[in-house]
Image 1 (tube, rainbow, N blue to C red):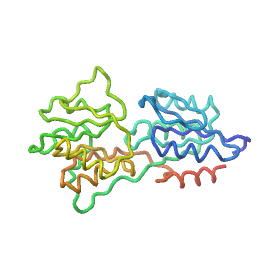
Image 2: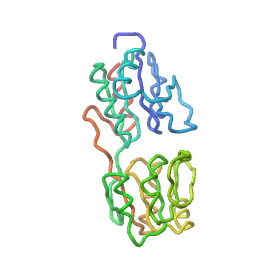
Image 3: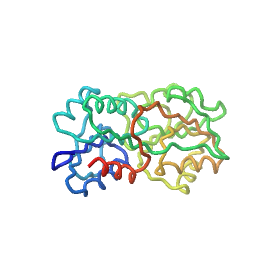
Image 4: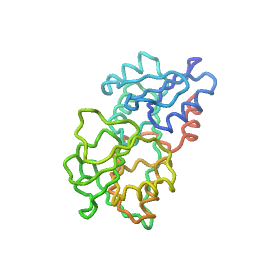
Length: 249
């Protein structure tokens, strides 16, 4: 980089993004901006500048990169924020910027797991086992509608409440934020007499306890697989992302 200050834009909204911002913010000559989509009502405090709101596609992101004289773009969004990742990849190519994807490893099925793997959240609804009537729904608050017409009872866990105009499934809403422990997840599943779980394969340690709890209790999980991601430089942990940035400086 030629300028005295290297401007790094982190597309955030995850714990990994927050940890990365914290580590990069102490590097000399580096200015950090974290962009949040604004979906979480009370995001954690972040070092450096914070931008809240969407970019209106890859062209909007490209315009922002140029206006703010961004030197490095890091995509540390949620593994299921696929459209944002594709927009970032296209904008980085157009702007000719170094571009990194920080993608946490996905969970791998191990002995004892009873996964029913599906491609989309919409496909998860009909894949729920017919003999399971009480379902733990852990896919966030934005894609609950496909389950609204099902006759099951759902325990729906999310950080923030869903939109007031959204059709909700029958059941109970649980507002909570990870990380979760195996002991608490087992207790939760037993308390609500859960018979199956619907989850996205988000990866990471913060919410893996539910997968372990399901294995412990021999419960099936309808596991939504990750969407396709663009090609390019990719790391799986914060430390590797920091080292990549140092090489760019």
